[in-house]
Amino acid sequence: MRMNSSPAPCRPGDLPSADLSFLKGLPVEDDSPVFREPWEAQAFGMALALHAGGLFTWDEWAQALSAQIRAAQAQGDPDLGNTYYRHWLAALEALVSAKGVSSPDELGRYQQAWQHAADRVLHGQPVELCARDFAG
Image (cartoon, rainbow, N blue to C red; front, side, top):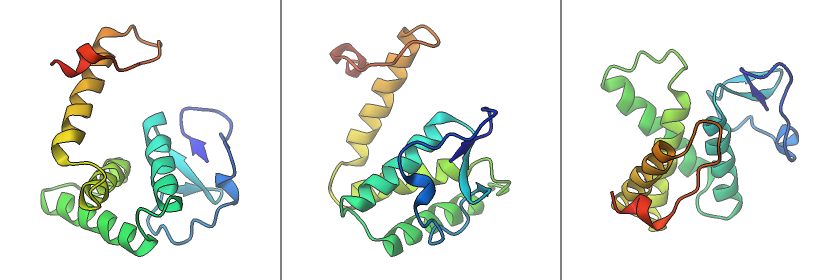
């Protein structure tokens, strides 16, 4: 696993040994996923964990991700690769909602809460949610 901003590969856990060939279109370098931002690596990890937990099959994942990419392209996304993990995250959100694990409203509340929490925390400090973050 590699993040562009770091000079050396970041290889947490056993992800580099995982067979990622089923994830067509995944940005890779030296047969490892490439991440531009930490949240991209986290979204990647969430997808692997949710699949490992049985929430969806790889076929369902491929269909959800393809649908997100097609929808974005229909709305003018030039498909330069820099939005790939935004589509990845949207596919995760869609699957989590479709499977009844969460709802679009709940996901939206958490997204707003994270934004509130990030706004009140100094740059470089850990972001932690608290009740006031959900108050708006």
